[in-house]
Length: 346
Ligand SMILES: NC(=O)c1ccc[n+]([C@@H]2O[C@H](COP(=O)([O-])OP(=O)(O)OC[C@H]3O[C@@H](n4cnc5c(N)ncnc54)[C@H](O)[C@@H]3O)[C@@H](O)[C@H]2O)c1
Image (cartoon, rainbow, N blue to C red; front, side, top):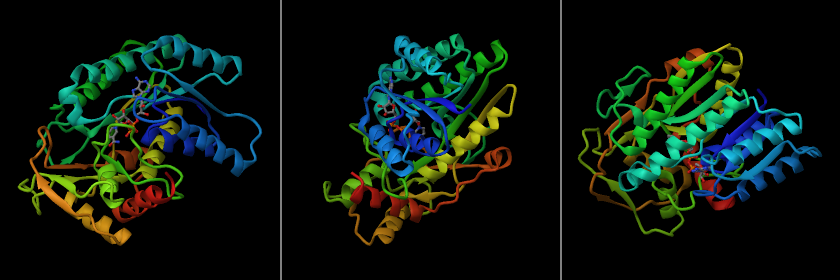
């Protein structure tokens, strides 16, 4: 299980995962197309790891390519066999992730998010690698069905993005039913923010800054004058949307626990929320950020975004029970670590 392919490796969650897995003794094969990140973040990880550990052997293999391209996938799986480190499992992060953008570019979302998973599992099948952790999302749940969402809450995504995540989960389920021995976990993330505590990694999207945290960082750094809050009349305590923010390091630890859990099983299909179970409104997030970092975030209110839910909070009992894992870090720590990285780590 410790020889692993990470797709979307240089992105926000992928890069933090590579760092943790590398330090946990994994042999990593990392793939990214660089559509929303740079491979240089992976070379940075590799260099820091080597320096810290005086490592002479190379256990971090970096590839540029598109996960839809079966040839690059075959090349990676074959190379892993040649160096006697056959890939035993995959974490599939590669994909497009903006709810908003997906309304304007649905075909790109269907193409990358669905054809990506299909190419990947076809090649995994050929190489008899049957363990996959898939990056799914809370956006698969029906909007406004419940405020606190457990894994059995109704599924009915509104956005093309959420639909691609739901269909990818469905494809993985069909695969699981069709042949034995697959170990599959769909991890439904809530809102990962923050950065590595040592400020060596953070969230640095190349073009798509639709997530809330990169936007707050832009205002904090002075490159934007104010932060736009989409809507002030949502049915919440202060009129702004409530989300379940989870520290990136807690989220990544949830992946390692999931891999460990799957490795004990002969076959398994799992849908699992990764969240803290605590809701924070956008206004509260701004206030906490200001307090944690002793600075001001000017904001204005703008129109609500189509397809948003007022409140999304994870019921995380299942993850606690089966993984013996729960998120530990507070929103204050997320805000402090995220800004520290932005100031020091760029
Ligand atoms: N960050 C969040 O808030 C969040 C929430 C729920 C789910 N997710 C999911 O988690 C995964 C990772 O998210 P992230 O925040 O790290 O996003 P990210 O954009 O930082 O990382 C995704 C990475 O995938 C790469 N990529 C995209 N298409 C590719 C392709 N065809 N082939 C190879 N690489 C490709 C990008 O270059 C990028 O490095 C995504 O699938 C996303 O949908 C993220």
